[in-house]
Length: 235
Image 1 (cartoon, helix red, strand yellow):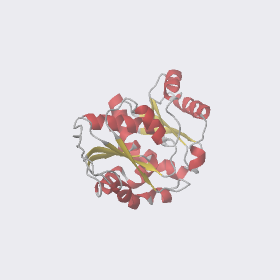
Image 2: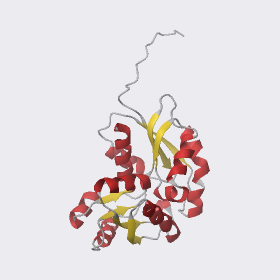
Image 3: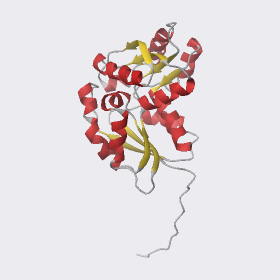
Image 4: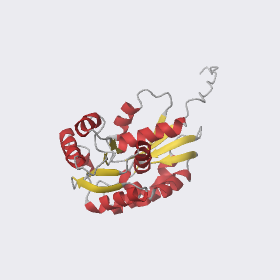
């Protein structure tokens, strides 16, 4: 065996890495993030967290203790400016502040965001506070989401759900079903914007069409999380 010489490249300090914690059952967030960050210069490192096949408040709460383990699997060579936790409903059950604390236990990161925190920031940036909520979840999961948004000054008096608990089915809800449901909810006169909740819903290529139909802003879990992580990483 011949031992060969090598040199070490310096890190690009202008390209701060981002971290992303994705649910084991999520089939949508990573492909959509590839599209949202197709122009990125900074790397995004991904870890997975165990999650239930069905979405209930119990399976969501169980992720709290798994967060430090998932965060610990992210690379440790450089500190992170931002890590995203990719679950809207679990963030409402666990609480955004607690999610951040649990991730920071094992990961050197300045800020931890999630779709709920990100959507609230995006709503405030747009100056809208009366949303229609479109959710795939069963009712016990919808209530904490609406309550969490209300604590951030965002009302979701208009809401609708597909009533689906199984993640594999959520990931396969059709494009047209999402467009039709969001359009129906968003047409209510009191509604200023629409929020489509769940990182496992395939929403990347439907936002523009719904906005064109409604002439109102449309936010989604994945779009909001991508927007907030980009903003936090660049500020």
